[in-house]
Length: 104
Image 1 (cartoon, rainbow, N blue to C red):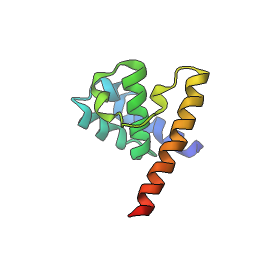
Image 2: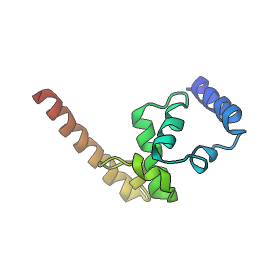
Image 3: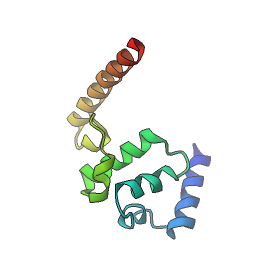
Image 4: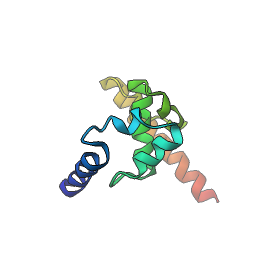
């Protein structure tokens, strides 16, 4: 994990002059933001959606709106109760997804 964080910090330092907010403030649109986040070390589709959701829902970043999936995300969490609700919804969503996957 420490190596991953170091790689991430190095990428932000090199690509964005140490200013991580440039990822979204300089993104042309949702597709560009998705590409920028995906290029970060350790960021797969799930983390892209999670970060996009936080940016859109908690920080009102317009270009991040396209990254918000149709299921609950960390972007919905703003209190201890919301965290409990998110964890329950995430568990239910995963169960539905696994059930639909095994049905095919």
